[in-house]
Length: 243
Image (cartoon, rainbow, N blue to C red; front, side, top):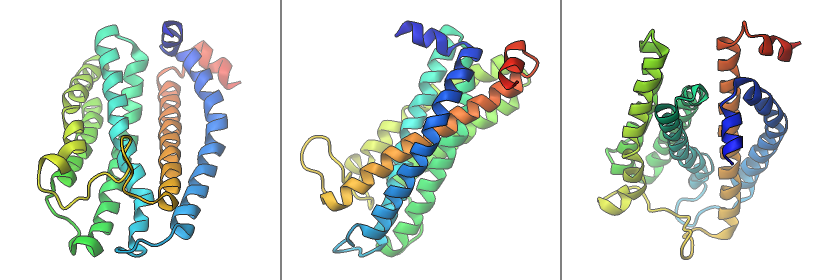
């Protein structure tokens, strides 16, 4: 395991690894997104209370779930950067931030679209929605810090600290509906006990969550390859890869 982690810290090895993974991940993700979207948006039954308006769940929930998981990925990369000074961890942080921000934005927008017919308002200062908005600003903060410093080592350190500090917001997002009065519905998918969503609606949702995880991985790998192309464009190993 440690040997694999050590290899991941090598730009030439990672570039080749990412190229191979992207090659099979791209068609897999596209197929899963297409199948999950058609299944959920067209073939899943309407909800007995919300009718067809609930179908936005097949975009909203996967985007929110993966946005939260993506922040942990960024924070772990920040920890690795601070403790072991591995440059590829800095690259990973920088690659994850815009993808996480985009997913959080999608979750906020689709939540607003869902909230209008459900609550009668596009936006309410609900505990979960507000904490998701904070998550969006945390992602933007990491992106801004990378651009604010001329010294990229100092920028990476500042971003790592912000990433780690921001992890306190993740359990708040998860538990907000339990800790405070909330218009937001509790979790429909439960790993202990019976889920509050019928299997005919659950399976396409699980497929879409898996597809969004794949999409996240694909976009992060593409971003990391782009970062390597920019920072190592004069390197002999990269010129040999591009031949």
